[in-house]
Length: 112
Image 1 (cartoon, rainbow, N blue to C red):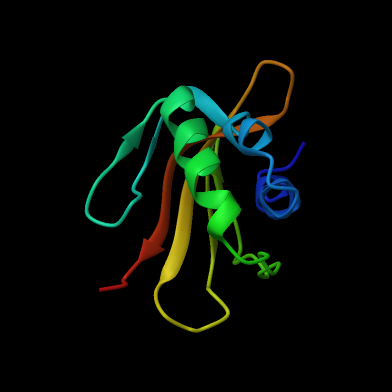
Image 2 (cartoon, one colour):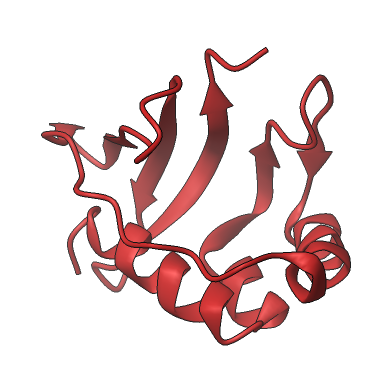
């Protein structure tokens, strides 16, 4: 029920290798800036991307979020990666039930 919950839920679902559960953290027409240099558009495409990637990925470690910026039904969430390279940022929108979903996701800002 808080924008920051999405980061915790993302780590839990990624570590469970739950591509469908990860995709459900995104709005139907969400845009993810991944893989680097391209975009993945839409919940179904995001689910397919994670289904392909998760089996090959190590466990995710929780990262402490930076302060969230909220304006009405939009919020900007971000975390600095543990390795100190770049940042992660997401725009999330409050849903009618009070929960939040990702609209824009840029998981590797500032990385080459």
